[in-house]
Structure formats: C-alpha cells, structure tokens
Length: 400
Image (tube, rainbow, N blue to C red; front, side, top):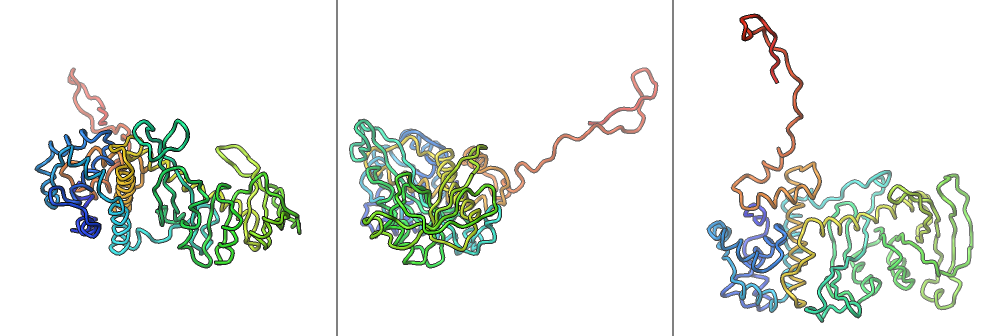
C-alpha cells in the first residue's frame, strides 16, 4: 500500500483540502484518501469493512505518512461534507506529477492496425452510467424507478488514459456535455464518438476549430448527396459527400460532410455501419478503422468496473458518490503507473488482483510484478547416469 501511494506528492491532499476550507483537524485529507483507496483496491462493500481493515492494519497504516485509521462516523461525515472537488483536483495533480517523473507513462502510444501511421492525437468521448439505489439517493433520479450517476470522459486513444472527465447525475443527455469534454482539443486532433454526440451545431464548432471527427450517423438524418466517389475496397459500400437538406440542419452545419458506409466486424460478425466525418482526404477504410478505435473507451470503462469498487457505494449523498468515483479513477491511475514501471505483460485484471492480494504484504512491489508469471513450464524428464536399482542391477533413472 505504501509503495502505491508514494507516487502521491507528500502534503498534496491536505493542501488541496485546506484550499477548499475543509475541516481536517481530526481526520486528515490524506487519511481520507488512503481509506477510500483501500476500499477501491480491495473492492470493499461498506464503511465498516474499510474501517475494520484499517484498524487491523493500524501499525502499518501509521507508517504511511502518519495516516490514521478512521472511525465509521468520522469517515462517513468526511464523505458527506467534504467538497469532492478536492478528489478531482488531486487526481489531475497526481496525473501531472506522474507525467513529470516518468514522461514515457503519458507519451503517445502506437495505435493498432495501420492507424499507427497517423501522427495525430486521437481522442474518444463517451459516458458510463453507475447504478444507484433510488430509495437512498434522490439527487441522482434517472428514471421514475431508477437512480444513477454518470461519468463523462475524454480518453486519449494512444495512451489509454483520461484527459478530461465530468462526474454528475445521469439526468443529462451525453450531447449536453460534448462542448465541455472537447474544449481542450486543438487544431489537427481527431475526435471519435458514437451517434449520441451527433449534434450538428457541436460538429460545426469542431469544424471551425480545425478538429477532425468520425461519428456514427443517425437513421433520421436527412441529406442530399452532392458527390459519390468510386472505391475498390469490397468492404466499402458507399463513399459520399452530403449536405444537410433541412433548413434548420443546414443552419447548424452549413458545410459539406462525408458519409462512408462500410462493413465492419463487430464481435466476430460483419455489420454494416455508416459514419460521418469532415475529413475528405482519408481513405474510407481509414475512417472505418478510426471508428473501431473508438471502442477503446468502452473497454476502458469495462476495465474500471471490473477491477474497482464502482458497483457498491459506501455513501448515499452526491458528495460521497463523487468522492468514491474520483478516488476510483485515482486508484486506476496508480495501478496503471505500476504496470508501466514494472513492464507488466499480463492482463490488467490480473495485475489488479495481484495487488489486491498483496496490499498489506511487505514485498518490493515493482520487483515482484516484474518477475511474476515469468517462470517457464515444466521440463521434460531427463535421463541421468545409470544407477543401481533395488535388486542391485543397473537401471536408467529419469530426473524430473
């Protein structure tokens, strides 16, 4: 545990809490963060489970920058009353710190297939919904009988790390947060999104900023085909230049769009999909492959939910839920960094499970992860020198 949290700059959590004017006299912000981190990594399902584990390992806990084991009421009160902006700022400050101490961690990675030739930053935006209990959480009312929180995220497709995130209730449609998610994009960047973000005014803003986009089109789009381009790829059904034909749609996006219809493999099956883009230079197959790259953010959300505690919440109000989500993202970031420095070659779920099992063990984590799983398989039997058998005769004994 100490080796994981050593990458959080000393005093950072408490200084952010003081800036937010949080009361940390009896329960420091670092102790608060450490308790929630423990709950995320071990997938604890309640406040009592976290507090009991902290009490059992209190001597080890005290040696981690003087952290203290929380009492249940104190812990609950901190989750309920402290501004979750502290956890959000902590996440981005730690992200920045890791980028400084190890630039390779956040450097652009190679894209799969032939997209590695693209010398551009590729981002995907999407959201994931976290189911909550309506009987306890009225602030996150999602439907008549359901409650949910939602995490909107912009993921760097090359590094598989978030570059922007919003945590809120699930009442807002995804397109309502599209402008905020894409505010940091620069000229030449590529944005990938599903059809939920196909808002023409939003796309026109990206076009004016020089950002290229690839999105699924909607079935109710009404357009005129200006030009149809020839193609030799049998998986490309159509490659067209289109213009919005309705007056209100034309006002929102007055320029031309490119519509590519292609056969794409999804879960081992061929599916016909149509994509909208503002780039007329790429090949139609590149556009289809770019949309395939968008699925990385869905895999990212799946990775989060499978390895962290984002199914059961230890607090019911809005602050407590946001604290747990942001510290969950922080736990994921620290584990990903540990994966990077240890050159872990197995799956992320196995890495998270290994760290979960060794969370209070006194071992060198980086060395352990570096050699974990590197042992070879069993050797074939080797025949050794002749040895006497029980009857005094000679026999050849295999050595396994």
